[in-house]
Image 1 (spheres, rainbow, N blue to C red):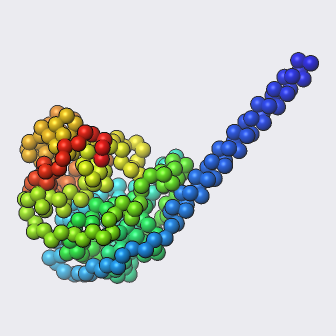
Image 2: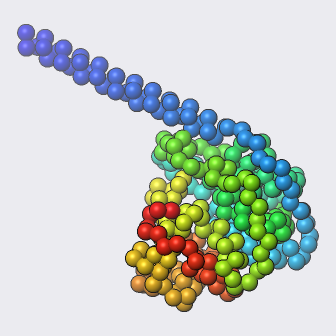
Image 3: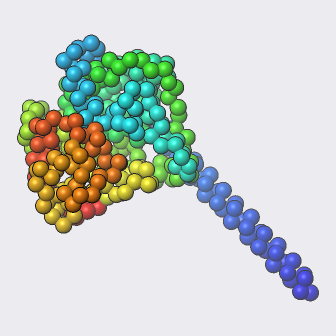
Length: 307
């Protein structure tokens, strides 16, 4: 009798284990379908156009500065210094997220792009095939003028062709979960009716507001930081860069702010995490650093994490 009960118990445990695995498989199947539905969703972007200034030396020079020291297109974790692309991350359980080849070489995703195609991806986060770009921080660029975006394009198109295949994304369980549940598509965060302000460059809060567009993706619209939507799960929360004195930069002086951007060192001696691309920002022109500081000082102070 004891052996019989023991056998029944063993059978129940096995059935329970099978049932649990079935539920896990069902849940993962649902997650997979939801994530891939999001990844393959097609949208319509508003009409727009950007000038193609191929060979324009002045535009290329301006574009080199913007791309290398402000916009982050050639940051080591994005399209690479040669703009031939590479994995932003490639590890399980997140999976592979790949920044594509932007040069004119084999494997390029932008070869043959028209001004309308460039406007669609930079202004609205929509690829040529009508699908939303994953990770591409188009929301950071909406504040820049058509002239500045055209200059950035001119510089990228001036780069030597790189023959490197642009690999598709290959998300693991965590990557699928993020794609299914978090705001990782710039298209969904952008005000598509927004028109960039006509602002003269200089050390002013008005120009600083344009520059600060590149900060919003990580630090949020209120610049108070928090968990970075769609970011690498290993990254720490973005710091508060609003004027809050308790957790932000309210007690900082301009010299502290400039030092942080130039050297990666906070006033307390700690070092900025590599997720903060200060090595790129250290190349910013003095007037742009001053403009960014002037603008951030005008923002409402918010406690850390409120984004």
